[in-house]
Length: 373
Image (tube, rainbow, N blue to C red; front, side, top):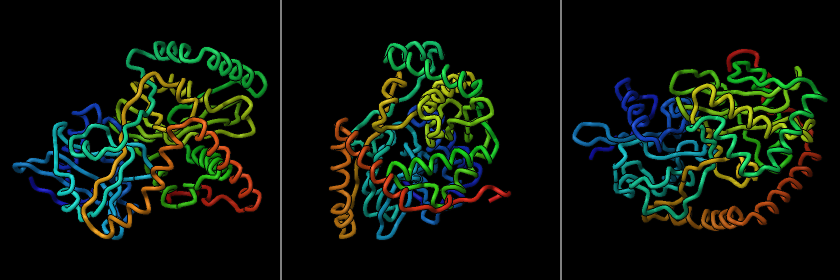
């Protein structure tokens, strides 16, 4: 077994084709965060992006995109920004995980959205969790019937609010796969406001993330693309989403809505329209990602499994890293596993966000697009 460390941007066409071949061969890898296009975009923007190319008998059997930080600390590609990571490899590939880390120049490798059950990582998995998905393999109507069965009261309420929004604010219109950068900036503005309002870190305050989204939004191929959707009441945008897709699966990434219309629950209405258009455009799944949002429990009709865990090699850096991360991870897992604690934590973050927003009166951290960024 031969492992070569390089960068995604240094791959040639044969290696890129092999990556795509391996990804398509395994349904578990049908996620755009595992696509070569995402790795190439990250590589253009971040110096710490690396790639392990794994060969056996002069044949590529796998790729591991990862981040290499100071002191040999390793993270999956995209780490906190993405909802799926893993080896893009032949399904039965099993490597010595610690030997792989050594080849990558890493002392530790933490993961929390790994494709569950991959042989290389399986013994290091500390938890396996469900990521809810909207599954249209039996058709959109079958999906919708399941949503109604999951929570008839919620479904009835959302449809009532949808009709009310149309009557009071203008006829509803849904736009699928918008290419308009101004529409993207509207969505980003809502999302930044949500981050601040709920006490979270504003991801769009980092210019490289804004550029990443812009680059991915511009990609449109049969096997990969950025999908911007928007729900309008009349001519007014009220809720939207930006996600990535493969040929058959889209991942939920940045959903947001205009809080002025919150009483109509436009975000959930948007999700139902998005599901219908996704199915009509040939997609089979929308992966909503793991997390404690209650709306996911009744919008889902299936789930995929992702795992959390840690691999380390004996070193002072790994020990220090563990001491810093272990209490945080344990506390997070306790909160996630207990709905009452999750709701309490969410309320506290929102309270913090209101206080912070009242103290800060700064402009948006990004500018309106005036051309290529």
